[in-house]
Length: 236
Image 1 (cartoon, rainbow, N blue to C red):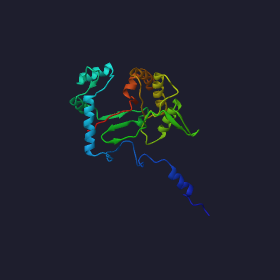
Image 2: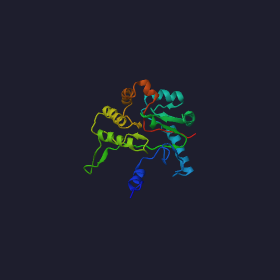
Image 3: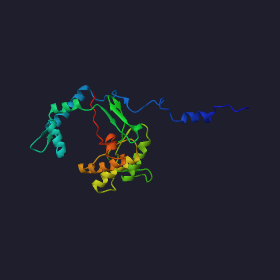
Image 4: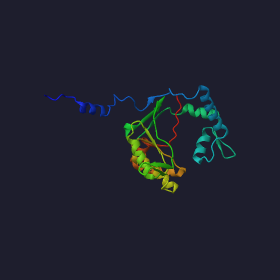
């Protein structure tokens, strides 16, 4: 008897094969806005209190550049050393803010267009402990762990941004820790990276590293692939 084509192995192979881009049910930047755990009144309360906090409490320890830029826009530097933002200043900033952003990645295929109600998913956190899969115990997180997590996220289709996930407890110097945090994230993934810094001048030094990795300062400015983890987007 001739062997019938399209047997079980062939069918399994077809089901196991990666989906084509057209046939994938989920893509980055799907429209959101359906999940609403808060009432309209609750949302209004949060907005109102945000205005109040910015206007009445403000920020402490603002950098000179931040103070100069914000006061020129209308913020108030008070005698108690706190930088406060009147309601009309915040509203003006929201009105003129860019509502069509691109979060660039090292690989252009991973660029994210942030606008409207598009939804993207990211890692986050600054865990100081990690569950070790080999020893079945909890231990302090280290630089190697951050790199490994970045590599994992790079292969996860539905994780679009890698924000630093853990603290580098094996690096005690804050500057060296900040520099290596960014380095390990960027080396592990070609997606957009969210990192953070304990001191402003640490960021300035980290930028020198990023300029080298991007191929120069001009190339970096054209496609900055690292940002602070908190990205705010106000809907149009």
